[in-house]
Amino acid sequence: MIRVMTLEFYLVLKEADLTDELADAVFEAGFDDCSLTMRNGHAAIWVTDRHGDLTELMREAVAQANRGGLSVSHVEIENEVFA
Image (cartoon, rainbow, N blue to C red):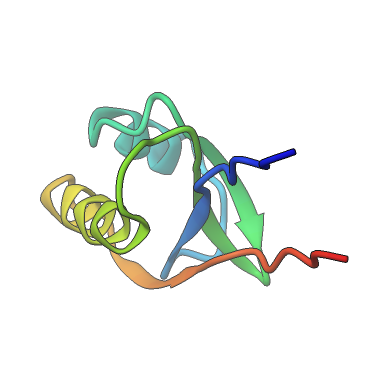
């Protein structure tokens, strides 16, 4: 059986709190298909269900966030373990 890996990653923002203003900014930046969450003490956008090359998707998401006035600290990827 071939397992298709879902491309997902976090855009970790410089903001440390989830506020209504931040949620509005994330939505207005076009991340309405993503989830706003906390990640290691910082607000983060969980990006899932986008198709394409992972590196290019991450670059596009960072650029999208920057255009929307969001400050990205870094990008994180969950590690999967295959047995």
